[in-house]
Every structure is written in C-alpha cells, then in structure tokens.
Image (cartoon, rainbow, N blue to C red; front, side):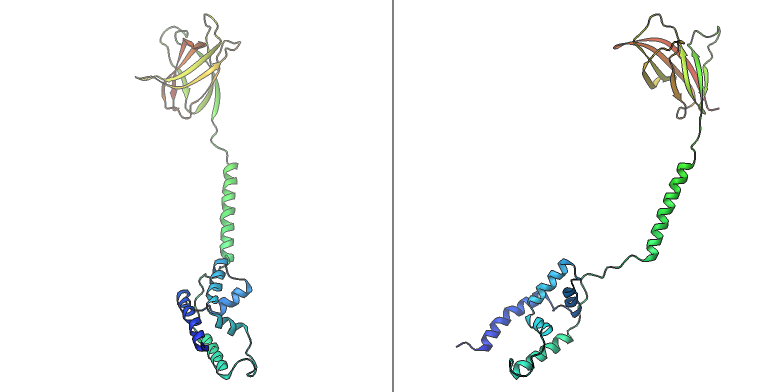
Length: 244
C-alpha cells in the first residue's frame, strides 16, 4: 500500500517546479487588491495563476485555524502554524504596475492658462485688421493709339491694386476675349491669363490686377479675340509698375 508521505511527495514535486517557474507568492497587498478588484486585468490574471501554485498559502490566508484536534493531528497543526509563520516572514515584492497618479492641480491650472492664452491670441489676430491696399480704376489706351510721339508706358504702383479697363474697337466681333499679362524682358513670359472676358458697352474689357506680388518693371497686357481654338492678337498695353 502506498503511504501518505509518498502521495504527498508525488504531489509536491511538480508543484515546486511550477512555483520556481512563476516565482514567489503574491504579497498581502496584491492579494487584497485582487479581492477588491483594484488590479488591472493582466495583473489580476497573473496573480491568480501564481496563487494556483500555492494552495497551502490560499488555505492559510483564507481559512481560520481549526479549533482543537478534531480535524488535524498535532503534527499537521504544527506544520500549518509553521507555514503561516513562513508566509508572514516572506519579503514583500514590489508591485509590477506603479500606482497611477492623478494629474496635479498645478498641472491642470497650467494647461488651462496655456489654452486661454492661445485662444486670446487667436481672437486678437482676428480682430487686428490686415494691411489695407488701395484700389483704383484705370482706363488703358492701346499702344500706338495714344497721343503722337513716344509711347510712354502706363504707370502703375505696387502699393495699389487695380481694375484695369483696356479699351479697343476690334474690326469684327468675337465670341469671347482673353487678356494675358507678360513680363516684358529679354525673354517675355506669361504671368497670368484671364479667359472668357466680354466686351462691355463702353468698349472696355475689364480685368482685376493685384500688384502685391509683382516685381517693379515693364509688363505687357495683351488682348486677344477668341473663337473656339483660334485666338487673334488685337492690342498691346505696355505698363510700368514701380515701387512708389
């Protein structure tokens, strides 16, 4: 017949191996936190796993001492008392997860101040008027149609924006008109084009011109008559833009 001690050794040998794998038993604080439900899910699962390999600890910490010798022998009572004493003297392990700290009042106030300053700055920016530019209307006469003599360029300034009204009477009407602004240097290049322009009753072809981003110098405003894919060059308006 197999003795009681043989059964106990057969039970404890694999149990001790698992205890070496999972480490020391949980601390009192960890067990109490587990019972209260204060541990994160992964930490609570780890504590439960460790406890499953320390059944004596579970019994010692959750069951009261039996009174008298009706259940356990004197030898077993001595062993249980020794186990409790051993558990109480085990060094307490530090918590795996640090305690979460609530944001300090000073930090909350500082964050509020930063937000308020940012909002105030945005409101001030909205309330501050940007640079105002004057706007003028100029009627332009095409090159070769102005007074006799040297053709002086039309004078404009980078400090103003304009509604230009070049006037010209074409030999025939077109379905629409186009205006190109060219920089008149050694290699002329198109600055912009304005399509779908209509001739007004006063004979003008109005177009808006902003000089804010134009460099001072000579430019040409060229008027085209457009029919489908065909465009006829009709008139040129030489402009000088100055910084004054």
